[in-house]
Image (cartoon, rainbow, N blue to C red; front, top):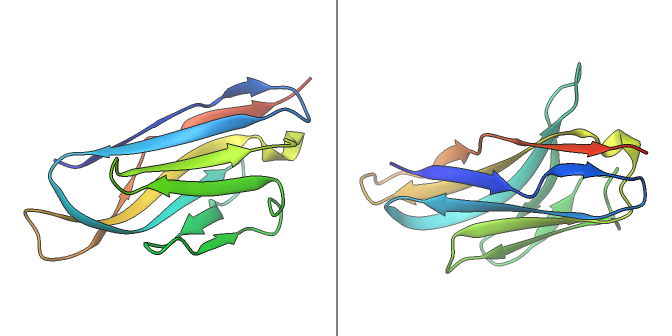
Length: 121
């Protein structure tokens, strides 16, 4: 059974930094796109950043220049370095990975359980 486990969330002051991690476990054949989403109270889930299998990246407009997504294919992990954090970055952050389990011939989307990031003084 494939699982994604996130870590690294917490409380940070405005202007501070956090690094989120998401690691996949289980019997996995291959991985494709890896993403970070976030959802603030009363708002829809939004894409924060994505990285393809060849390392191409895209970012939401609100985080460009402040956040950096990276991946470690060997460890089947994706990271989000968040700098210059603002109160409006407060949300639950979810990792999302498109991967193919060894038991399947198809790629499917998998989600982590979410990790809370709170930016407040």
